[in-house]
Length: 107
Image 1 (cartoon, rainbow, N blue to C red):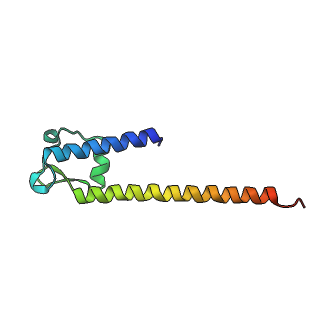
Image 2 (cartoon, one colour; image 1 turned 90 degrees about the vertical axis):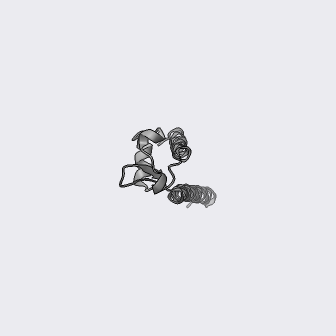
Image 3 (cartoon, helix red, strand yellow; image 1 turned 90 degrees about the horizontal axis):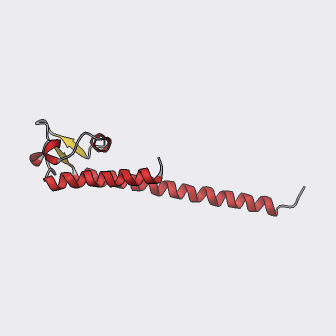
C-alpha cells in the first residue's frame, strides 16, 4: 500500500471515529444505527468492526469503544516503529558490508 493510500486510510478512520463521537455513540447505552451516525458499511468501518473498535449491540446499534480505539492505534504505531527500526538496521548492515568489501585487501 502506498504512503498516500495509508494516509487516506488513516484520515478516513479518524473521520469515522469522529462521527461516532459526534453522534454520542460511545457506549452500549448510547449506541446508534449506522444511519443515525451518518456512516455506511465501508471498508474502514469493517476493519474497525473486525478490530473490535466499533461494536454492535444486540439491538442492532453500534458504538465506539474508546479504549479499544486507543489500543488499536497503539498497535499500528508499534508496527510502524518496528518497521522503521528494522529498516535502519538493514541500511546500517548494508553500509558496513559495503565498506568492508571496499576496504579489504584484494586476494
